[in-house]
Length: 189
Image (cartoon, rainbow, N blue to C red; front, side):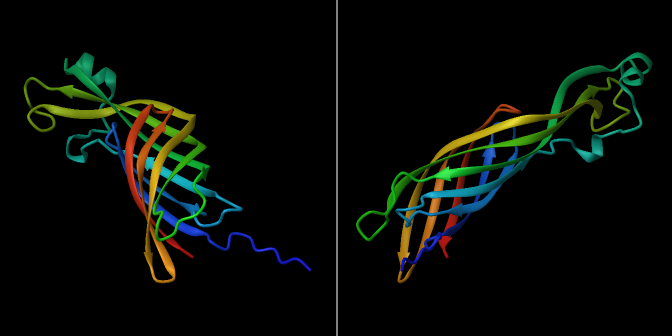
């Protein structure tokens, strides 16, 4: 008779990242760093930004009104997005012990991004917004497919029977094009 044990060294992980678009991301998932037969885990990744100041935002002013009626100048555009991804991670190093506490891992996934662009204007008379700076609705860019990937290091911290993990590395996403750094932690279950 053969006993089959599935994912007996499973670990839950959570990480936080910050990218070049000013967005914060969260990743939740599993890893199997101590299971030499199954070193593949799964994750859910959520990232997004909200760079629009609510004090300077006017939903009742259109682009036509800002440019043709008020004569204000558009100074910049602010993309705001939310992205959801699912994927897998893989740990080439399969066993941690008291002598080997550092390993590498890679991950990749696919997801969906919703994006909207806001327009930022300058009111020379300074009636609207703060010191004449205000934001209105721009374009609704809709959604798009996003590919996510990254590389990281995993450092195990043995504490008696259990292991805790610290993860850190780099993450890149295709839509919108971002690159970020992450740090996280995990615990052996």
